[in-house]
Length: 258
Ligand SMILES: NC(=O)C1=CN([C@@H]2O[C@H](COP(=O)(O)OP(=O)(O)OC[C@H]3O[C@@H](n4cnc5c(N)ncnc54)[C@H](OP(=O)(O)O)[C@@H]3O)[C@@H](O)[C@H]2O)C=CC1
Ligand SMILES: O=C(O)[C@@H]1CCC=N1
Image (cartoon, rainbow, N blue to C red; front, side, top):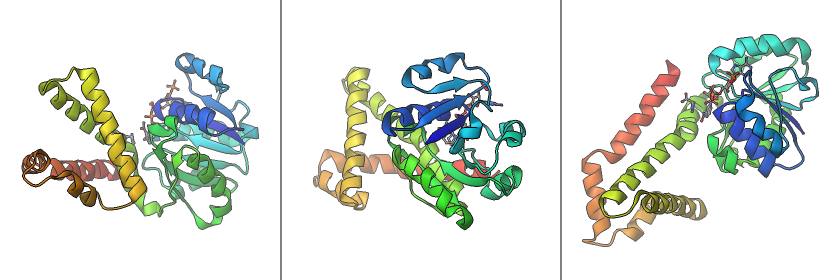
């Protein structure tokens, strides 16, 4: 397929890199106004352009990875030269209905919420679309399945997905950083502490995904009675570990909803 990514920033580049590695047989074009920092993507076989319209008429899927306030400018530029296109938007807060109204009935609006782990084929990309576009959305779903998981969700959960799955990357990284900092305090150099913390999180996530059980069942396997784990966990909870995470996620959601 021919994939046209508009907005070669953090997310757009992660998707382009992921597609070049994990989704064979696609032709990828990525655009931004100042291309100098992403020209290296050409070495991965990705076409880089400052012209949003460059080969767009051949695109099977157009992916929007621009900021909300950049949408109208970009659409004004591309709409005169496209018709009958699938436009997959990762723009946070932009509803399918709003995008569909902007792009007209001749094109299809699909909403996607990937995260930057797309680059490593490890994103959790939530996807929503209207029933009329069910068939056209299948290519988008298949594409993002190559980049990790791609659950189809009800659009009313899209803002929640943004926070859980996209902002969630930063939340998980902050846990890893805190764990690393503690690791330094108890005797490791930062590199060793970081490597141990990251691998431990990866191992925990793999167990959850493999066994598909409640985390507390796995936690129970680690917490030896009178042992160090339960002592540490209880101390963390007394200082608001879970509640601070929950409050943070709910605050992020409020920020999107405005
Ligand atoms: N970062 C993330 O983890 C995630 C982000 N999102 C959403 O994705 C969108 C992009 O986020 P993010 O990648 O972080 O933002 P960035 O600012 O990193 O990327 C946006 C890119 O768009 C380019 N751009 C701006 N105007 C135009 C234009 N007229 N034509 C073409 N390109 C343009 C900018 O480059 P230049 O100025 O050179 O044109 C910039 O590189 C946002 O809506 C965000 O909410 C969603 C999920 C995860
Ligand atoms: O922070 C943001 O607004 C964007 C959306 C999710 C991740 N980054």
